[in-house]
Image 1 (cartoon, rainbow, N blue to C red):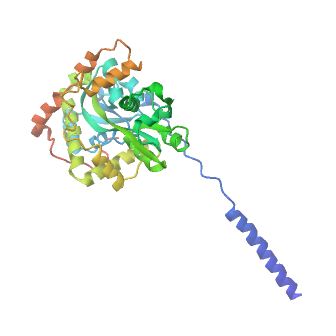
Image 2: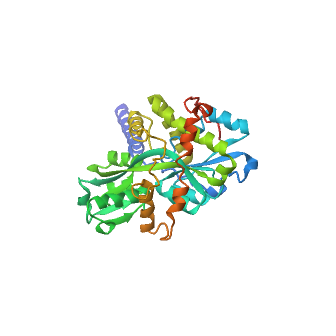
Image 3: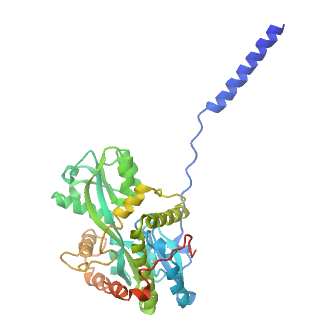
Length: 379
């Protein structure tokens, strides 16, 4: 009798253990991806007039290069003091791309950080001026198991159309006596390129460097077959600039100050990356990078590498060698700008003189002194 009870107890324990093991080991559904953060740009609170005494700045937080130094302005105690003296403050507005920002370059935004292509389009169509470089980077053409641009002939190439990456792809093909007609063009959004290359939906991609770093790390067999310089600029509303020349100079001086502070020490670069990462998470719910040695080295080697930075090149308006004119012609050739678009508008709205003037008055604008707060001074 006792033996039967012991056997029954053992069987019961085995059953219970088996059921429990089933629930423990049963595969569970992966956690749902967080819903993408959607931004309604129309609902942003813009200054609309001088009464508010708010300088509205448009930034692109998803791009490290296009948000690197604008973030520093919101930690800059020197700029805060200069603006407080006039009764002004800063306000930040995030946009996913320069194209998204363009409808709001109608007086609602006072300063913007724009890449080559949207800056040129904006100067052609709206009353804005370009005053200095924000960052310099690269556009890369990346292919799987290919070594040269000539090997792209007949292959599927993904790229975000009407962007600096599109321009870089076109320029790369010219080096091999090819055109866009010699490849299979696959227009994609920038955030779709890595998956498309990984899933073999394309054979190559063209994209700016901050995204390219991740693609090269994640896609086996991928390598760079072409690289070209790309730039982002500090652009300002011309009406604001003419009404408030001292405020224009204070903000440009703050950008200049940030570029030099970031280059001085590695820890300064780390702080900038921390600020950009925090803003990316607030804007999109996640960040595209980690603050580690790899990313610090990338920023110091790439975005901070130009010795003349952040001055605009003196030949930027040159119709033969100027980088802007080549992009202007690309935009007309691809129907992004009308055939009758005037280079003169872009040229006259590109100001190469103001920043050197601010540098000559460096003591007044305190361009070589630094005082950054760890937390944002404005929200």
